[in-house]
Image (cartoon, rainbow, N blue to C red; front, top):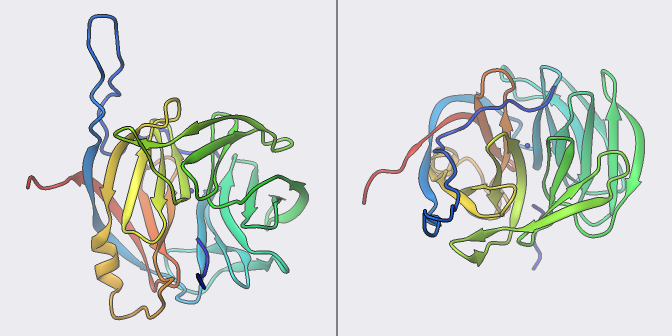
Length: 266
């Protein structure tokens, strides 16, 4: 999320999931136990080790990244670490990034400003004010879904960013906070938990965690090549049309294509 002193509409793919269990009058209580999955590395690509990754997003066939600290919006590729294009966003701390297929939406951490980008290369179309912090952002069925570090996900109207609804995220009945980068899929929203190697898959309607995903293999792969306490997992992108899933981290030298698989039985 941030330095301490103290994720064309998205593809409608289901990653490692089973049909959601719903409660019916004669079915009893739905099983609240989330699936346990692991992220297996399929391929490793170069990534700019100076990029303080806050958001990762496919948009109009290209891969974009929102970076914090001396922040910017940049277009990146799987072939090289250096960005193909970038535009600085001065005087704010950029955060999550989302696409509705036509526009890019970029959050800021504590500046309470949403940047809306349009065109190719993207140019700022407008700025919209909102209340509270911005951490992660993704687009789902005509709504922008925002995390702010708490256990609440807020659903915004893209036109003026007003809050339409919200849901509390719970893991087996317990609120789960520190939700950071988001990526919306048809069957749930993926969120990384800040300063952990864990991703959660969350039900839009109930906030219930459907799956807990162990991505520690990625952190192990970059160990010894990152040297900051803030070099943690952050950055989730689903590729439209293929369903390929990409993950990276702040200040990581690698970007990973991963497959989600059932965790080994213990």
